[in-house]
Length: 352
Ligand code: PHE
Image (cartoon, rainbow, N blue to C red; front, side, top):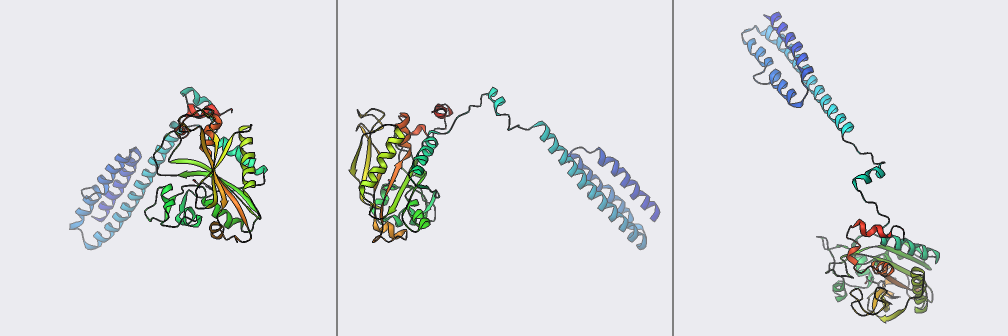
């Protein structure tokens, strides 16, 4: 009895080995598993027929059956891994992209562009500011209420918060920054002791209706200079130098009073609209002037937020509207082109 059972087990294992070599898919393996190891499978059949055997036979054949079962399971797993490997290799050889072959892809009309015009102008501005001794700083898009408002002298209930509605996070403590002015505070914290000057370019976000000159996502370049005995004359000098560098000619500007809680006095610097030469268009809302650079002398409360003593130091700050500047520079008549994702639009600037 015992030896014939053992023969049956050995024969079963041999047959399995042939079958498993022929199984080429995962489904075929699942089939095999059911056929050999399932409840109604061959192995269970052999074990069932043990019911009439002596207890010793049952024990020794049972032990062997378990060993055979373990080996079959391992072989099934190995076979499965091999099938998976083959499938991966097939995909790797049949379905791959040579990312170094951009030029040949042009045959299927992938369009190339150059740098985005905002990036071009941003880099030029960075060069101009670097040449005037400014550092370039960066800050996060997701800001805290403190850096975006409170530290900038805009307390929680101040109506000035309504001027800059934005996208708040559920905790109502974090928001998408409404301006790059947050980096005034971060910059002061980092620089610690005046004199220092820096600019900080980047995206800003506002929850507002869009039109030819307003977008929910736009770009600014913040500037700050802190030292001793700084005056409005210094501020105007920097702004004029900057504009004549960027436009390569003298542009007409005007300075109006403007309210921003973080500066005192505050100004709006407008330039004569270069799209319509001041005659009136949709970009300048028919006024002939475009607001380009709100600015002013840093409010003492802001210096205090940044850890600087307002009794000793003072300075100025400005927030250059980068998209507007780009529009004036390239005579773009709608800010929405800038985020349109239209390669035909951006590639025009590649060689500018
Ligand atoms: N942060 C202001 C805005 O986005 C602009 C500004 C910057 C004004 C710096 C004054 C000084 O409207």
